[in-house]
Amino acid sequence: MTNPNLLILPGDGIGPEVMAEVRRIIDWFGAKRGLAFDVSEDLVGGAAYDAHGTPLTDATMEKAQEADAVLLGAVGGPKYDVLDFSVKPERGLLRLRKEMDLFANLRPAQCFDALADFSSLKRDVVAGLDIMIVRELTSGIYFGEPRGIIHEGNERVGINTQRYTESEIERVARSAFELARRRGNKVCSMEKANVMESGVLWREVVTKIGETEYPDVELSHMYADAGAMQLCRWPKQFDVIVTDNLFGDLLSDAAAMLTGSLGMLPSASLGAPMANGRPKALYEPVHGSAPDIAGQGKANPIACILSFAMALRYSFDQGAEADRLEAAVEKVLADGVRTADLMQSDGGSPVSTSGMGDAVLAALDGSL
Ligand code: NAD
Ligand code: IPM
Ligand code: MN
Image (cartoon, rainbow, N blue to C red; front, side, top):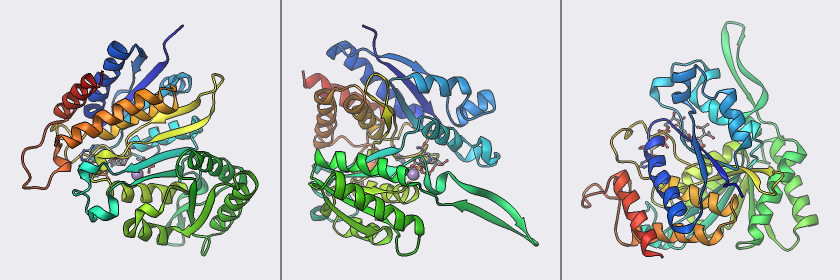
């Protein structure tokens, strides 16, 4: 039997730094748990632009389509801000999501008990938090036409279009309902049906899917602005949140702070099942390339490590090994190991990115 193949795209800024720790963890699972992967590495984002003049080559796109799973670090950085929009690093990531048709972006926000006092919200509000944001990822205002900057009279107009078809809403709604059945059995759908026609359609379609296919799952609706407020007020009222591409982007960064740091949040972007029954998939931290700390060994690799745990669970049917990795991370945090983003400015000495990797590997060894 051949090993599953994993395409690794470290990208830019702290992407390669956090991914180096994940590579060590992948090797650990190969050596200690008999879970061997054929790993290949390629360029994306600014790194690909520097080498090839494009943020994603066709050859890399093809490899991603053929991979059993893709693991991505982060893309972007100030160096590339001057580039034409069509070749910006972020376009490479958007092309991967669109062409692989990764419509369901799962962004869990879990507050590890050891970090409950570190969140900017009160312990009571976040302790034990375990919610899942399902963000639609291949449509909406990120991709709608018309778009661009046009000239109108003697000024310019920037245009983007929010657009959702019924089938696009149906499929992401099903993903959310399926997940809810395996969790707390509740879905809250967020849009702005009070001001946007796309929101009216969103609410109608999610309601129809809920009533006809998932009557056992409790469904509620919120306007996304009120949803943002409720996420900060009492986030534990939620189980699964399903929302569009742009609202999901904003709400998941906000949810990151419930867990203590953006450096903690993993994600899985899933598409339709491939011939082998597994979904097309790309796993990446929610955070970006963090130019302010890149190259300093300060980045927290946990979001990227937990993204690999999601790969074990959703692409490789290794739920028990994913639990093992998540438990190792939880133990390390309980032991007080902290990268700089998880400390108050006066709170002791942080470990480096590789120091956190060492600690997780030691905890994995201890799990055997
Ligand atoms: P960012 O997520 O890179 O950083 C925001 C803040 O969080 C920074 O202060 C950063 O130091 C901190 N941070 C983020 N990840 C961290 C980690 N693992 N450990 C410790 N601290 C961490 O967002 P930004 O600054 O708005 O964007 C920077 C670049 O990244 C931009 O070019 C943006 O387009 C890109 N970006 C890429 C992705 C992605 O590749 N998926 C996601 C978001 C932003
Ligand atoms: C994210 C990022 C991306 C997005 C960018 C880098 C394209 O912010 O993954 O959350 O807006 O989707
Ligand atoms: Mn984002």
